[in-house]
Length: 68
Image (cartoon, rainbow, N blue to C red; front, side, top):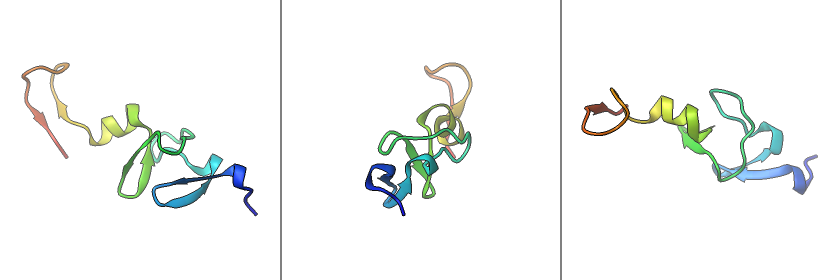
């Protein structure tokens, strides 16, 4: 049985605190401080940004970017 102190709610469901992990790098996340894609949690950086952020050349500016 999960104690209230061990439970976090994120993405519309309850998680055991150690089970809320980034889908890509497996880092333990905090409720509300992560990104979501397809109902799965991702850490903001680098995983979500690398997987679903803009793609392109350079480090910003007027270069062309593509989006998934």
